[in-house]
Length: 326
Image 1 (cartoon, rainbow, N blue to C red):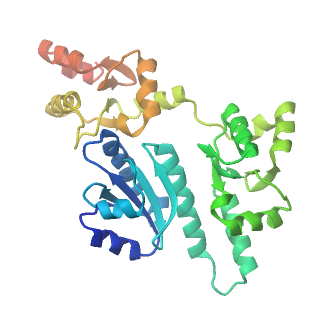
Image 2: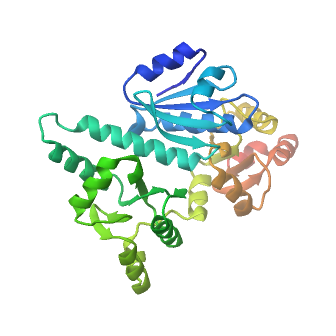
Image 3: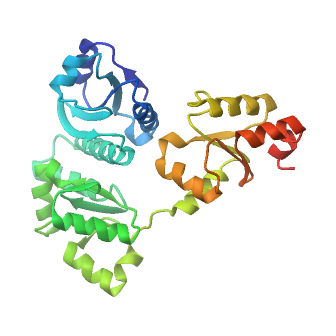
């Protein structure tokens, strides 16, 4: 789904009247991190699971009345709204927290819309809980979010899962009282946090600690892809791969723009990765490749170099052969 650029207060009001989840990015052109987060929401809008989520960009200073109403004190700030009400708020350029909250709220909306109207409230809730539990291979129901736990037990559980490099999703029970109370009955487990794997309750913090001490927990948990493995996969994504600021259609720095111009002149096919959308890749690739700047060009998984190297190869007449991997 495309991102709507809001120009007037009336346009924003009309967006609020529409059904479903609205993600509003309050931003300013002078703040570079806002441009980076615009790229993040553009990518989120392309994901099939978020096809019913609407995204918009709100110039915070131009629409000062709207910003004042929603207490926007800094940019970037994201509001997740449903029915005109704020259901989540993300302040700062925190792509991971934004992605997690958008996906969680989108999942809640889809579960509500998919529930049969003729069923009883208890059946409705049980169906919703079952879908929530199975929305991820490893699902944690907690107070708060992984980035901001709101009780000591949840914080300790997050620390344990992170220590074991678990790949998991979470649901903030404080955001939904119906889920908070209903899951206790559904699972016959009276406290939080609760961890589920493959739709089955594992237990709370005490159980997780016991299983960790015995070594049983680690083998059960799905694991996050290690950064080094992810970087290897990315640099081998295409025979000619460019890591840059922006993309080939819209480079976001002069060096990247010049690089794209040179590569386009060769006529060779290539793919790009926008490092501004992923801080982990941006910093990790510098160490992985032992090359401190961007853009970086890779041929068949091997680093060629940055813009200066590409220019030198162009001047010497070796560029085409190098880029073809000859």
